[in-house]
Length: 184
Image 1: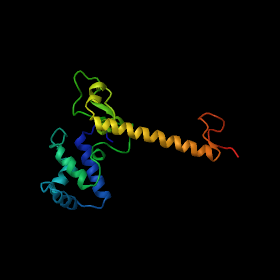
Image 2: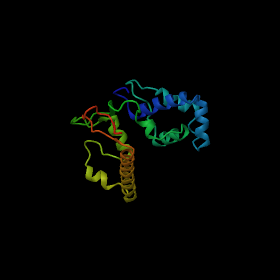
Image 3: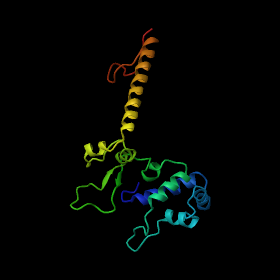
Image 4: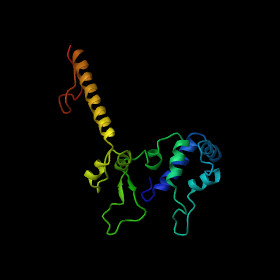
């Protein structure tokens, strides 16, 4: 990911990448958009989104709207997060704002992995008040997360019991060999 791409530029790049990967022309993608209720996303609009027509300062003339982002994700059969956050490099930085904050505290850039977790609702960004962030999670989501965590712990426990039942134990990392041992 280019270190100075806006969110709209990331979406445009990902739309073009996924469209081509799926063997679609801009016209094909526009037809998908029309069928899901967005006739305004024509082939020429999609071409303009992808090319990011620039002004004299090199900035996009028009940012991608929230509605376009959601429609394009539907038409390309991907989760919206996979258009707005790069999927290939969790260690690069993501531009959260078009300009650095004043005074600059580096708050406009965050690691891609953190941004993905923030968008998913799993973790606040580093500069956010975590108490406020967590207070807005719906109660049912908390219950669902707790259930999934408990189920995961139960599955791990059953797996360990099954390994022990057949005479295998997992040696802790750094132990002799560092691999599972067979007793038998």
